[in-house]
Length: 343
Ligand SMILES: Nc1nc2c(ncn2[C@@H]2O[C@H](COP(=O)(O)OP(=O)(O)OP(=O)(O)O)[C@@H](O)[C@H]2O)c(=O)[nH]1
Ligand SMILES: [Mg+2]
Picture 1: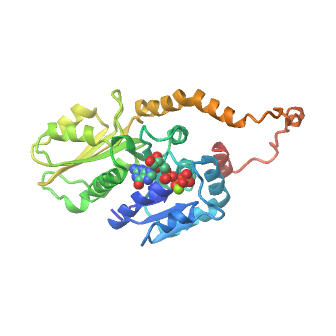
Picture 2: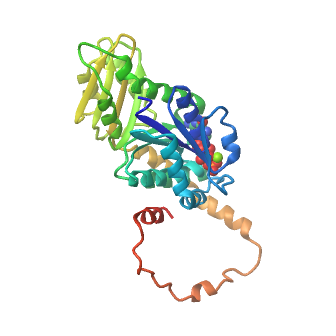
Picture 3: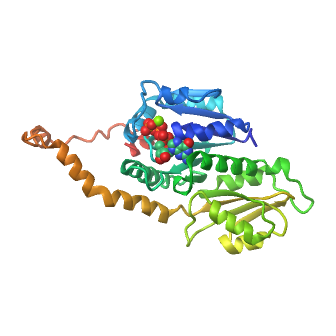
């Protein structure tokens, strides 16, 4: 599958996830606004520094503007370095570079005719309010992109970052290797079925479990699920290589009836991907709550450091300027339309 799926890692956290995928033989291009972040990626094959970028210090807007100004070059780099049937854009939702650039880049690459999914990271609850604001904004944009493929989520609230990266990458790689490694007379999963699972819009998760019974696997998927599944959820595909007495019918009963299931069998462990799931709205609600709870305090703090005694609102010219005429003469191009949505 390493010819079918490639990765575009944007920002520092994505770089760490990308390195693990590259070690497993996948093509990864690392894109960053910070040369220093890129320099930490030793032995990475394809790196691209967005010109004039000096890091985005959690400023999503700065990242978007840099991507907009350089999009043709970014698209050219991706096309020439990591051409494949499907791309996954990896980004942390809580930072600046990846969070700002990620959803817009997905939208623009889809417009170029590519199949694009996402791998994104939710900040841990003890991270800053700014991380939470960024994360919520990022997901608001991401979940609006109707034509995107599977969106895998790593929830930093569920463990240690580096360990979470490893568990996720090991599980995803094991899933992608199913067509090559798992052959059974009782049924096979081919590459087209893996791709169908990955093209499915909505949240996706991958999990592995050595237990021999359905109950073990159901529990492992619930525990392992990087992002919590909604209780009232949709599900489109369950694709799994099953071991022991694990039955697809039991997984369907536990996780919801999908449109289709693909299954094969092996002697070592169950590897399962569920896609087309409802986005984790309850978890995102907790992100929102952290922002909301702290809003007044932050406003107060900002106001306190601004208390200089000088008169406020001195720039009265702003209020007097006549409303700007809309320049609707020239119809903007579709790329411009997409970009302007994010500004
Ligand atoms: N799972 C995981 N999360 C990480 C890792 N490194 C950083 N994070 C999380 O990622 C978020 C910060 O995003 P970064 O990727 O560092 O930010 P960036 O995209 O480089 O953006 P700027 O540096 O602000 O321009 C925080 O929520 C961190 O907890 C990692 O290796 N794994
Ligand atoms: Mg960074």
